[in-house]
Image (cartoon, rainbow, N blue to C red):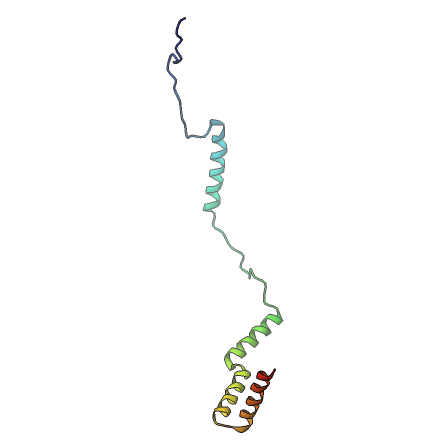
Length: 107
């Protein structure tokens, strides 16, 4: 029995190219030319507003928030007054607070 060789005879050559196929070249050149023209053309943008204006309700709400921020909450003023009168020993407020705290403890 004879031995057979599994080695190929001759040489193999591989060619690797990063260039696009020749049939694509005209399309690429056309597309790049168009892109260059678009890039070089000065643009004018829409001169008007590009957002929707606020509704009357939104403007009223923003105004109310601004007023509250500038003047403060009337609840804070009332709480400060109650605290001051309680600390001063006002019998009316002390009695109200005592009965309120008793109702919390009982219930």
